Image (tube, rainbow over all chains, first blue to last red; front, side):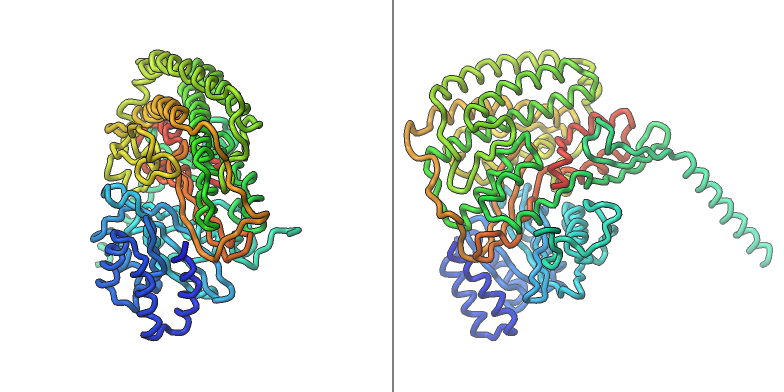
Length: 190
Length: 385
């Protein structure tokens, strides 16, 4: 639980264009409480891509979360699949942060082919601008993300470039409102 | 030169006519949403003669916006509406929610509570699987296999009613444990029921799984290879039927499952027969698990932790999953430190297995459609959330 608290701090730190001192403080913080195996996985990603590109949000038993910029997510995802062995996406979801004017898209990746990874969930996240919410699709790397991405498109309005069908999926055919999981969409009477 | 152009033009026009004719050959069929054979779910298929050449799933007819609703209620108020997506497996769908909230708010569950929770979820898995088996039976034209599981399911429902007070929507799992302790004599009732049910399972095997007609309709139909299963990220019985022994109860044991000795049931063929057999084997294994849970459960003790009126934790997030009747069921919860969740995402087995539907249907015969569709263990209401 303790490592979670660093998450909100990290977000604010990230906005301050992350000076070197905050970077080291993040890595120190995570290293001190990092479980060994999860930490080594994350270290492989961080050493392959630089510290500035990949931010470690938290590392705890069975779970780890990294934040990458949207234009780098395809490279990081292919590295995670080809080198680390995570082979499918369990879930793709988005969270709206109107205060930061950002939407976070988060892929929960896991593995069937590697027994050691079967208890692991790697959360690969990125943050896109709320007004210009576009990011490249990952379905060429993780085919299993196809319907999840389509759902994220209709629920949060994040356009996945290269996805064959950025269109309605679960909502009614005549839906003519903003994407419902954005925070400014209110349920009537609530 | 002019002649050549004219020639090209003629060929182009000719190809168009051929293409149009081919389009005309295809017949578009809409399966569902009101057809009882598909549940509240629609998919469009195009058939060329006997063969399906196109399939487009169109879910959403029972979309309730569960994830949005969660943002308006506090962690405890969310429980009753979160079990609506799959009322036949309501203990499991609130199980991973409770686990995630417990991690966020740092709640410890008493040991007896953990055992009762696991017991209730095993009983509920039987209820769900029997319901699914009944539907699978009737849509392959085997009406005995509709009547028997639905009758036996009532016995498990009676057990759960004695335990929780409600037939199907129990709201039994809560962050911190379970709502109430077991009634007197519940363990004996459970053991009696399991012993009876194991005998029934042998009869199921005789009348249904060894039935030559059923085997003809399912064996070698809709084969999902191991590689494709991994690529599509399917889960639960669909995954285990394709030769991957993955079960969240083993891969990432929650609560007391690391103390329970059981085997992951899986098959290697990946056809509809394997996909219908794996839940059956799971039911058998579940009987062992229920016995073992009743054997190891502490004889007395608290069943739930005492909570604050509005439990909340510091800002943070949690992803927890359990093995439900339809595979891994994960909750991703983001908390901003208030008693209401900031964002809740359900990653459900049905939604994930839907990706396999067009993959398996395209290229197979129209007559094989029911045996493939129902073998995917697909629950439309859960997929729509």
